[in-house]
Length: 361
Image 1 (cartoon, rainbow, N blue to C red):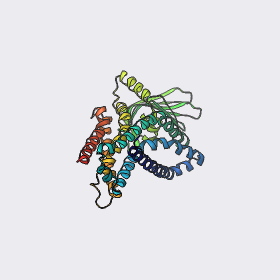
Image 2: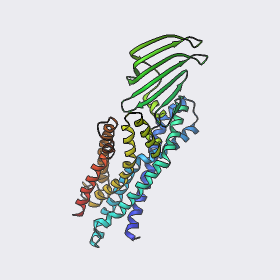
Image 3: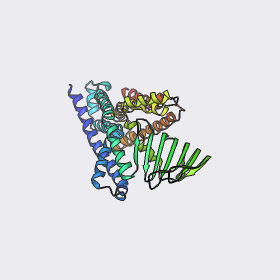
């Protein structure tokens, strides 16, 4: 392996390790101070919170890796440029392609590692973290199959939701059972749809049944709409239901097949499926973007490393905004799932190619 290749790769990975350590510490600290009151109010010991935060780390790593890759590449090449190392290498006949090749190989390797980590570690860790938060802190007993068919128990209330759409805050095919002291059904509410708004649920096409202490039906009332205040927020359903982050590729594809076999659209799951491939690829784009910005030395504004990092952070913010917008359009069926998952990556790839072409001049 050439000395230059080893040197650049080592510098990128060293910066990457430092950035990741700082980001994880900050993320965990913020999470700790945000949730410590909830754990204390629920009487959950600090040791369980430590376990909760530990299981949150894999998800944090996946979410912050592309940004850490961008920053590490920016710092490495900006410092090389500031120390005139790039000028010296160029004077020695080293071309831009050879200079950026270690960054590309490192980014490709991180793509593979991030994909395998997302598939092998994150689903189980996220499930355990959600279990602690929902059942031990929020004290809502839940059960869910591999789709979003959710059962939740909160005191004497037992709720069943056949399908939940988090982007629209809508639940479909709801059944709400109110249990009596003898654990019999005292009241049962069935609704075709529930919409969360203003801190309460609005149910549509409702059948409200009441039972006596012996379990005999006393009355049945049909309503087109009714408002219901229950201690159930959309976040509870989202954490109780199995998200794409908690599913591997095989389980996610099985879920799509089952939903479409029933004649229902599965656009949101297809977006998540394609995003599982698009997101790790972001590491390659980010490392090359950082190399091009830091290596050209054109965006310095007198600030050197600080100015380049600020510029890179600005571009990453624009990327996340565009990506979130496209993903939401995919969830709503406005944009094809594949395009929704890859659109922001395609735009960023074009921008990176433009920077690379400019760096060659």
